[in-house]
Image (tube, rainbow, N blue to C red; front, side, top):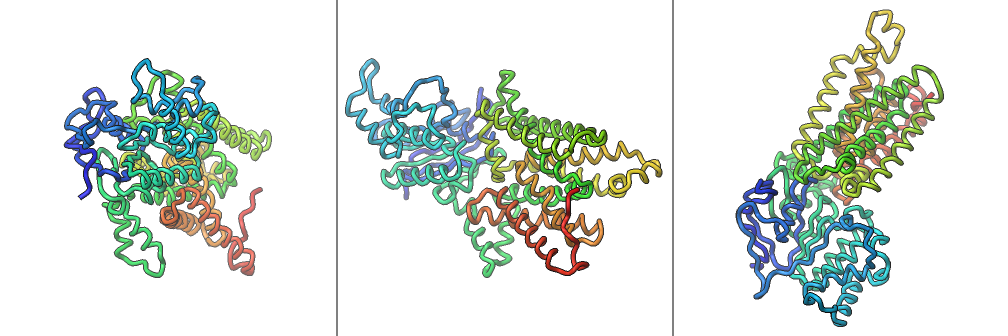
Length: 536
C-alpha cells in the first residue's frame, strides 16, 4: 500500500473561525500526482493555504509523514500575485528557494547558487534567467517559479493555478514538464486548477470541491473519462454508457445541463434577431454584455473592496447585474438610433463591438485577478458550474422561454407588420421593449454562463440553418431550438473526447452544419429548400 504523505482528518477550513468546507477526510500518497479541482470560489485556495499552514484549520487536524524533519513544500503561487515594481531577474526569484537553508545574515553560498542554476536548467528557464521577471511571459514566469520551488528540495510540489493566464500550448507544456519532473525525481505533486481538460491525463488522484462537498478518488472514478471515450466511438456506443453520462450522479452534469439549456434557449431569441434583420446586433451584444461583466468585476478593485474567495454567489450576481445593464442599455440605445434613422446601423454595431472588445482588454490589463476566470469565459470553457449557477441559468432562460411562448403572436405581429399592430391597438412600444428585455436577459445569462463565443454562435447559427429548411414560423422556431440543443450536447462530448474548449468546438460544429445546409440550398432545385438568408 502506498504511504500517505499528508492526511486530513475531519478537517474544517475557512476564515475567522467560520467554516467554508467541513468534514474533509482524505490522504495524499507519496510520489502521487493529485489535482484539486473546483469552480472559482469553491474553496480550492482556502484548502491549499490550510494545508500549507498559511491558514489555521477551523476544526480537525492535518498530519504529515516525513523522515524525521518537517515536510518541505515547494510552493508555486500564481504569478499575477507579484508586483512588477520589484526589479528582480528570473535568477533572483529562483534563488529565493534556497533561503530556507541559509542562516539569517549570511550570504548565499556558491553551492546553493549553482544548485539554483541547475533547477533553472531543469525547468527550462535558464535561457531567460537574467531577464526581468516582470517582463517574462506567463509561461516563462511559471517555469521560473517552478525552478524556485525545486530549489527548496521539496517533499511535495504544490502549484496554485500554474496555467492561469497562459495560452493552451503553454499550458500543455507546463503540465507535461511537471509530470516529467515528478517521474524523474519521485516528487509528490499537488496541483490546484479549475481546468479539468488540462489535467485529466496527468492526475492520478482528484480532489473535487463541488457546492460545499469534497469528493476524493482516482481520476478515472470521478471523471469517467473511459465512459466518454466509449460513448464517442460510434460503432460501440451503447445505452449503458449513455445512461452513465446522463446519470444524476455524473460529476460534470451541470456543465452538460447548462450547455444544452443555452443551446435550446438562445435560438428562440435568435429567430427574432434574424427575422427583424438584427443579425449584426446578435454579433455585437454578447461582446457588449461581456464588457458589462468586466466592468462589474473591476468595481471592487476601483472602490477598494474585495469579494472573498468563497462568495462566488454574490460575485456571480454582481457580474449578472453588469451584464444585463450593458445589454439592455445597448439594445435601447441602438434601437432608438435606428428608429430615428440617423447614420448606418451596421457602422454603429460594428463600432460598438470593436470598442467593447478593446475596453474589455483594457479593463483586464488593470485587473489581473479578474483575468483568470475571464480568459476561461472568452475561451468558452464550460467545466465547473455550481448548482447555484445552473439554477440561475435555468430560471432565467425558463422565464424567457415561457414569455416567448405566451406572447409569441404579439411579438410576431409587431415584428412583421408594425402598422397593422398599431391599427389593432397593440401597444407596440411595450411589445418592442418586452422583446428587447428578453433578448437582453438571454444574452446576459448566456454570456455569464458559457461566454460570448457560445452565446453568439447559438443566437444566430441555428436560426440561420433552420431558415433554409423550415416551411412556417412554428417549424422555424422549433427546428432552430432543436439544432441548438443537439449541437450543444454533441459539441460537449467532442470537446472532452479530444481535450478541446467547449465553446469553439460548439461554434465550429454549428458552422460546419450551416455550411453543409447552405451547400444543399445551392444544389437542390428551387422549391426544395429556402434560399440562404441575405442581410439588407
